[in-house]
Image (cartoon, rainbow, N blue to C red; front, side, top):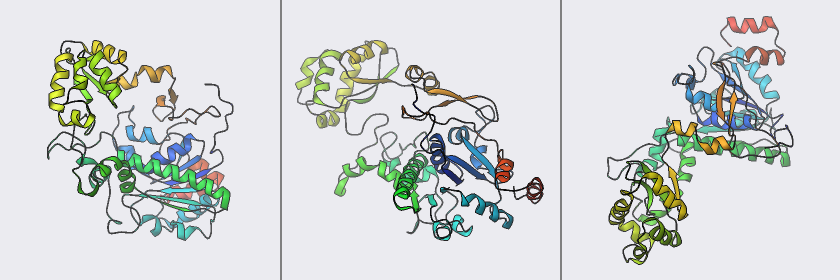
Length: 400
C-alpha cells in the first residue's frame, strides 16, 4: 500500500483517559490508531488493573498489550488534592475526556461534563458504564459476562438445552461499548467543527450489546419463540455450521439461498434430486428437518477428506472456512498476504500487532509502543511546566 500522507486524521487531537479493563482502553486505542495523542491516567503503583490479568506476552498482560499501544502513561492519584492542578492543566488543552470508572466516581472527582463544560466548553466527555446514567441499574457493577447475560446473549449461545449456555470467548460487551464510544467520539468531534461546542456522550455496555442482539430480538417479536441455541450452527438457517469429514476434521460451511442449495445438492452431495425434496426445498423446511438433512450430509462427507469436501464446496461456490485455533490465526495466509502484521515496541521488547481493520490510502495508522506504567509521567509534567523539584515532591507525596 502506498500512502499519500503520514498525516493521520486525529493528529493534534488530545485525549485524556481515566480507563481500566477493556471498554475505554479499546476506544482510546482506536483513537490513538488514527493519530490522537492519548494520555492514559493510571493509579500510582498498580495502574490499570488489566495490566495484571495474565503474563502471557513476554510477561505482559494479553488484554493490556491488545488495547493500549500508542498511548502515554501518566501515574496520578486522582483522589489527592495535589493531583487537581495537574488534571486542570491537562484539560486546558484536551479535546476529549474518556472514562469508565465506577458509577459516580468521575462526578465525585469533579470530572463530569456538567462540572467541566463551563470551564472547558470545547471538551468532549465520553462516559462508558455498564448500564448508563439513570434508571434502576445505574449503580450496578457490570462485567462483560454479566452484560452478556443481561443482554440476552447467553440465551442464544452454546448448545441446545437449558444448561447449554456459553459465554463468548472474547469480551464482546466491552468491545461493543468501546466501538460505540469510539464512533460517538468521532461524531462529537465532527459536531464540534460545526458548533464550536463540546458535548457529553453516555455509552452503556448493555445498550451496546442489545443493539447487537437485534436479529434474535426481532425473531422473537411479540412473544414468538426465540431462536434456539444451536452451538456453532445457525439457529434459523440450514445447513450452516460445522460438519465432520471422513478424516475427523470439521469443515464450516453456510448456505444463504435456494440457488446455493441447488448447487450444494448437485455438486457437493452429488444428489440433485434432494433440491426439490419436499422436506428441504425451502430454508425453513431445511431448518425444521435439520436432523434428517444432517445425516444425509454426513453420509456423503464421511467418505471424503476435509480437503476433498472443501474442494467440492469451492467448485460449487458454497461459502466455507477452516475451523482455526489461535495458532492458525497467527499464521493465517490471508493476513500474511495482505501484510496485516507489523511490529510494535513494549516494555518486554518487540511484539507483533495486527494493523487496524480498514486500509486507508491517504495515511498509515499509528502503531507505537505499549507503555510501561508511568513511563511518560515526567515528560508530561515537564510539558505542563512542572520543574524537576516539583515532580520529585509529587513522587515523595505518592501523587504520581
